[in-house]
Structure formats: structure tokens, C-alpha cells
Image (cartoon, one colour):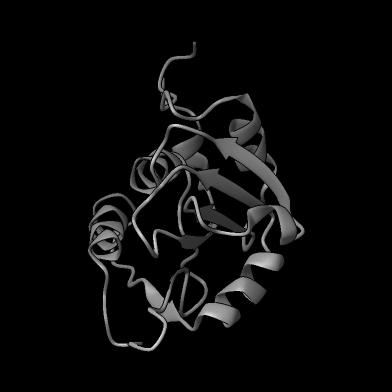
Length: 148
């Protein structure tokens, strides 16, 4: 156990977050997401839902402020304007922990293509449909590194 580290962040995920650089993407995927066939390393988070994992990740990782978009969700098939309840909750978490960022919707297969280029995929046991989010890591400033 370590001080100040969110308890859902196990050693594999801590390693992943630490090795990611500015501009790298991480996918937090639901239970139906084809994580194993995407290509990036998969980190299992069995027993954890995607909202809790998003909160854990964003408690330590800033989003990228140098690009127009730094967070994405999958569009609902056949209803691209729909916003599933789980995605409303994702937006609340992002707004609370990362600041003024909008989660942008991406067509399903375009979301898969983005996921294939991510650094890591965190496979949760989120059972709500469309419980997937991609987050782009931002810069950690020197004053944020050490808290004495």
C-alpha cells in the first residue's frame, strides 16, 4: 500500500500510467469491449466498473490541453445523438477531476481504430452498454509531482 495512490490502481496499471507520455491514450473498456483483439497491452480490472476506474485514473493523470479533444466515448449504434447514462456519468467525472473537457462521441468502428493505437486498454467488468472511454494523457507539471 502507498500513500496518496488510489486503491484501484494496482501495480500493472500504475506501471502503465507511469510509462505513458504526453499525448498517449488509454482506453477504459466495458465488459463487452473486444480488448484482447485490439493490439495494445490489456490490463485486467475484474470486479471494477468503468466509472470507478475512470475516477481512479483521472485522480493521478491529467488530460492533454494541447489538443482540441482529449476524451472520447463510443457513439450509440443507429442513434449517434444519444448519450447513454454511463456516458453522462463519465462526463461528470471528467469535469470534476480533469477540468473543462468535453467527452466527444466517436462512431463505433472509428472508436475501435483509436483503441488499436492506444498505449493500454484497461478491461473492466462494466456491464452498462457503451461504458467505454479513451483518455489522452497530458503534461504533468513540476509543481504537481512532489507534494511535501
